[in-house]
Image (cartoon, rainbow, N blue to C red):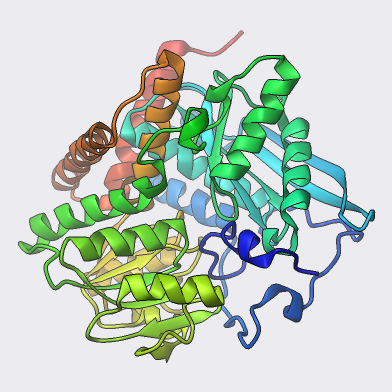
Length: 467
């Protein structure tokens, strides 16, 4: 079933773990969608580990909001407004496969909040995408954009599919049909998608081209994360991982009085975010001792050679079996005695079931929503410093904003300028978060949410309600 697998493998970003059932109704794949066997989805000789059971992503997002709303004593009307997604689209669409079969796919696009501007958020291709997950991720994007003080609300979308099972032609056809189905929902001043798990710059190029063909002229600002050759920005690919490094380095210095030099780091998930976080931390002196992907993990107390690991992955499609390393399970990686733990896979990885085993000093959230509210309480009691996703991995949306602005102006920056501006925005907002922790006597997540909610509430009150 898998065709041109080497080309397709690059499209599946870090995907450790599986989304469990939601606490609210979620749309499942139609019965006609083919169920892939293990042999069709795994590299030969590798079996995925059984991930830690996870809570509903939307339940986690609402739990985090409720916790902070209680802390702020937020009025009921505002609380109700912020917990509700503004628009939700579900699409079912056919695609003719290479063997002339017609296969039905299900996709989503959610807009959480448009008070501050057009919505912004990734498109995810993964077998376990649900409406529940898109709602949660859109909500987290709202907080992230507000905290970064950029004029976006939160959005998210996805298709229920494993992209590694599609040929490049099938992937393009599916992407173009999905883009057509959601085209009434997206636009440069309405909703600007970006890459996420299972998608990349090529997928964004197909979406941009499809949307432009419908309008009759090129509209590069409908999407971010595009190739540089068609209006993308330099520095976008590394932005999220590099931003994690900037933020983690600053927190290490302020909280522990130390640098990244010889800091031990474990990274869960080795897609775009995890690989760039590992690489940029290593370049600044950190020792990467453990890495995992959806098939398992590796460990070397002396440090992992990232260049050799990239070669190994190009040959095998996984970090598993890397020469000179020991095999490691997901649970073992999360419980390693390291200075920094970077969960950079999917949401809901650290829960009340395993948080007590976390021994890292700093937990830097590379993924969106990797830690549940119950786990937050356990980690706080243990003295673990949790750098929340809405500040830790915000480098991606900041540089996506830069790409959008450059596209609107048709004036492009060099990579040095992109990195300088990203670091400036990230660290200035980190200072605001740390200042709020002191004034309000709260943790970093609560402080970040307070700032984001106050900014959205202020904008909403100024705009008023229509009609």
